[in-house]
Amino acid sequence: MSRLTPLQTALAYLAFALIFRFFSFFPTLIDHDESTYLVIANEILNGKRYWLDIFDTKPVGIFLLYAAFIKIAGNSIFFLRLLTTIWIGLTAWLIHDIQKRWIPKGHAPWLAGMFYLAMISLFTFYGVSPNTEIYFSSMAILAIWLNLRWPWKWGPMILGGLAIGCGLIIKQAVIFDAVALGLFLLWMIRRGNVEPLSRLMKVGAMALVSFVPLGLVMSWYAREGALDVFLDHQFFLPGRYLDNAHRSFAWHMIPDFFLRYFLLTALAIVAVVRLPFRQFPFIGFCLLWLFMACLAAMLPKNAFGHYFIALIPPLACLASLVWHPDIRLPKWMGWLHNPKAGYAVLIVFLLLNGLLQYNDYYSKPDPCLEACKVVESSGIKNPVIFTGTSNYQALYFMLDVRPPVAYPHPSLLFDARFRTVMEIDSTEEFKNVAAAEPDFCFFDLTAPRGDYADWLETYYSPMDTLGKVVVFQRNAN
Image (tube, rainbow, N blue to C red; front, side, top):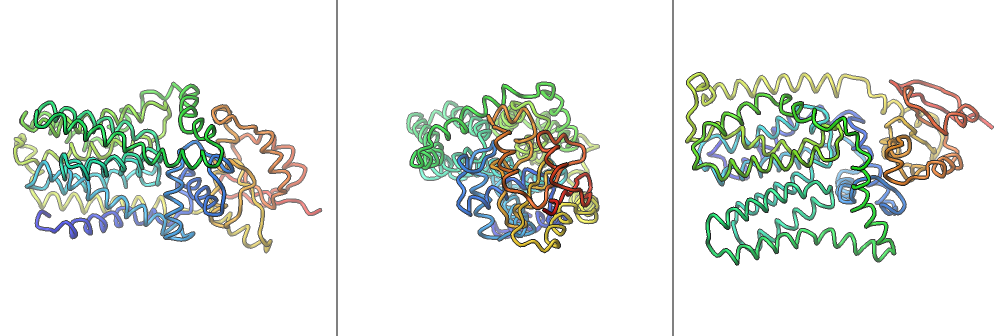
């Protein structure tokens, strides 16, 4: 692959990203977080103001990004997932080019990008379902690429700061990636001792510029007279979230992640152990990056796989170092450097991954789509729906209807932890739903219905069950 031009390499990564993730374009619902992004982004495009009229726990950046996606792709979930796949393919190219700065020859750069694509396209909650970690991690990778592609240049370092800043308004966890990059740059200044003051000023400028996107968002809320709301949700809400964390989930996700990607974990260990010490700068940076990403994933103390997506890029870089020209592998591992073996592994992965994704995302029933058809077939013009505990909030987006509550993510209304964190008046939200008189409501069979139980029994009748979700239709007056 070293003979390819940068454009050809980028197109190759895009092609493999499409192949790896193709069947994931079809289901209406993979993960309810993605549905929330779509709903709130659509509401923003319809004039709602985030954290004033409609709410979630995440910073505004992910919803602004999805609003841009909707402008490009319209209301097609298929094409919105295609845009995410293009984003991932371009990120793989950035990882390839980062690795190429350190290893100009050999297959390691190409494999770093391919490992990233494979890892992020294998497990549902570790990258197949689009989530914030995919996007803010890419912003951190862009910043790293700019710093390594044009080292110690003012323009690229300022752009790198802006990339970190864009990641910051997507999710605060990007700070950990930024710290890894900042510490590495400071170490390089100390190690090189070349123009230390000038370089230190550039690092400082990059750090300051990273707060520009956040400052722009803050100024918008200030103009809306809601600076206090912004400060609470951006800075204090994460603290309340940590105070209410499920601490029993603290540690078991670390071995789960590394065992899930055991083969690449093993390759990374081999590379770290077998490479000569003169290669330490890049190995050291990748290990620091991996460690900081792991801290960010563990801090919320939740057993959510998507928190660990940010560990995938540094692990992919480390694993690909097994193909470094200076490495000395044991004889029994020599087959790894045989291109025919590499092509065979790729073919096997493509077949297995395609088969698994076909089974998981294409051939299975799509109850959320069936729910959409139920509403459409009713003949009711401009139907009012409430998705309740169902995780079917994608219906608001698919039907282009307004949610009757300010909190479309079901956990915010029905999980006591989130009600505490967000300081939600669930009684007031129930009144809003009741006043809207939804034509259809969707509730999970296994979830408590709280204030809605008696109301459903009085005014609604179950008409169908789709998967674990009961469809309720309002009784005729």
